[in-house]
Length: 146
Image 1 (spheres, rainbow, N blue to C red):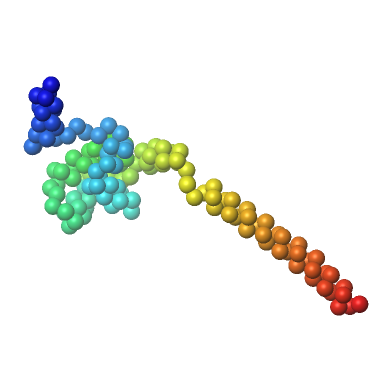
Image 2 (tube, rainbow, N blue to C red; image 1 turned 135 degrees about the vertical axis):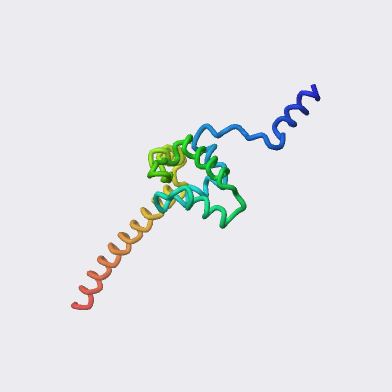
C-alpha cells in the first residue's frame, strides 16, 4: 500500500495545518517556546504582554502564536491565568510542575548512591587515622616519658 504511506506523510506535512494540541505536561514541554515561557514565568507572575515582548525580543513570533503557546501550557496545567481588568496574568502552576518533578524523581540522582558510598569510605578513613594517631600518640608519649 504505497499510496497509503504517501498520503499519510502528506497529511502530516500539509502546510498551514496546526498539529494536534499536546495532551500532557511532557508534550507541552517538548516545544522550546513553551519552555522559554516557563523560564520567564519562573521569576513570578507576568502579564501576557510582557511575555509577548520578551519572546519577540528573542525570536520572530506573533502575539497570537504566544497566546496559543500559553493556552497549551494552561491546558497541560503548567501555568495558571487570572484576569485583572483587561489584562491576563500568567504564573507557573506548582501543582502541574509537581507532576513533572514526581515523574522525574523516579529516575533518582544517578550520582547520589556512589557519592553516599564515597562519603562512607572517607568517614571510615578518618576514623581509622584517628585511631592510629591516638594509639601511636599515646604510645609515643609513653616512650618519651620513660
